[in-house]
View 1 (cartoon, rainbow, N blue to C red):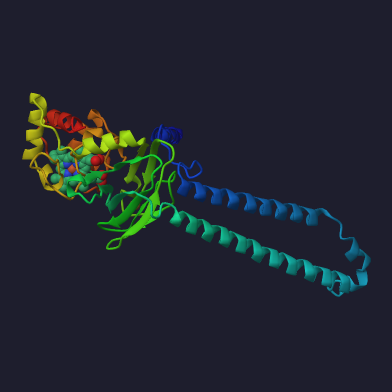
View 2 (view 1 turned 90 degrees about the horizontal axis):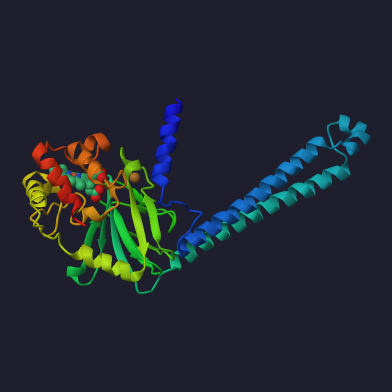
Length: 341
Ligand SMILES: [Cu+2]
């Protein structure tokens, strides 16, 4: 039992280390408004809770002098006239106060929703299309120039201080796009497009998580948003738009040959090669990403090798086929994929 607890806390600590995921630590205006609403609710409702508890303790402990004095009337189970009308006034007052407080909460919540939805409107902006898949994320940076459209997976970079329009859709079931430090949850619904603006005012790495149960590996469907200064973002974009560079290293060439000769190419794309599969994460710059399989494992050579040997052991039920990769091909294949920066 204690071993389970230790393992669990270690897992939680490891998955949190260095990557933020918190609604009470907003990094942009949308999340800021949502966090303000949350604090307002928390303080108001806590004050009401405390007031109710204090009042209850007070009524439980005080002596009922008036009732004691009016023994005769009490025996008829009826309070005296004066007490009766006082009670009526108190109950009416409390009812009106309750309705008024609920009304304040509704106004605050609708007001915040409206204010959040207006943020970012009409400004020059980046458009990122996100498609939910069981159990990974596809991202497409839109551009009026088709050669500048970027396809990637499980990780996005955004420039600090600029609104980014997220256009969400789904390939299979309902998912929900959620980066707690940047915005609330937004459902991704098959055959519909939903939109929202996100904006990060502080650079950082923000963890996102699917927030709508979407099947077996729902919990292993996370992603990262990396907010960085505009020049760094532009440099990232320029390098991601490049096709995978050919290598003169014989090991990497062997790895590439292996990739192209196995079934990998039916599902995955690596731009600059003949691999053009469209129903799995684009691997053109896989080596530059932080994680393997939508946040399931940190991206390093050892984890990748484990993934290639048996993706079903690491993420049971996921839609990658287990392929018997020849033992001579395994290491070069993993090294090749990691070299795709
Ligand atoms: Cu999900």
